[in-house]
Length: 452
Image (cartoon, rainbow, N blue to C red; front, side, top):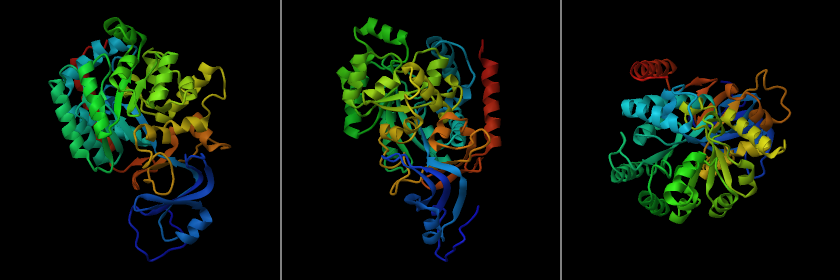
């Protein structure tokens, strides 16, 4: 890689470098986009955003990544996904959510679920995520200890879900075991620089009131997020009301789960009162537009949530219902849907949208002090995009990132100053091995399952 013309005998580590970029999208409070600036990184942390000439003069001893035709921005944060479900990409397509889950996904998971399934699927998803510029994932799946190890080994930042269901799964045989295994994992992750935990009750219709009350208490005591599917389909909401006499969000409110700890995923069925309560409680909304569209689940009222002051982040959901982990593609869909819903092209402009996969997503995870923007003192979680023929000319760097096919133009990825992708080449994962593992799982599942 090119180095600065000014050299110094001062020793540097692999975590000391600078990146020279044509456009530096900070995602700071002022939403500054700096032109012809360099990001200075020392010991894996950002120490400056300064003009090229100042970087040459004052930091000529640092190795320089020459991206002077490119865009530098914070690493993207996927606020909701099921990483290991990459092994079920394209499985049981074109089914409505209830049938998709109950007749296809859950039976297949029950048959094939194992630590090796989760490990191999998670690695495949991490590779796809990195190549799409994602540096942090918020995951909900079985064997979160395996997910944590795979993410740590690959170098990606992750929040792993401490899963809870009312019924037995491969991860736990009882509600008490879900809690004991989850809390044991939480204890092992204390102080981990890259991996954190969140409670992950699957949904109000799969986790009853008692366990949810326990989660509300523990989440408050331990200051942990609560990551949960909420109001994903009209049928789910109606069935819950028929059984319990209230809509799911009202039950969560009664329990005390509507709070700044809650990451409520999907929210395709909201009334005005519920939007107001989400805002008053400080809860976060996680929007997964492509999964919702593909499953015919409905649309989240993102413009109304934003106007009410609700923090909104974006996730891809799992590759089994999307069918990719292209977060920038997801964001473009989110922006277009919001414009359509409002009948206003100015709704959810590019700069505002980009915050939903950077600083606003970091805020939802309680990590905005560490990641989500390129500012001195924060971790060097960042990516570069080199515009190709489909991205030029560049009049507005943020608009080009959101509205063009920019994911294939992601060139470099760093997490905590460690480079994980260099000129689109993965540095911590072996592509050929991942491809072979994926094919092996496809063969195994195809031989044993009815795909019709």
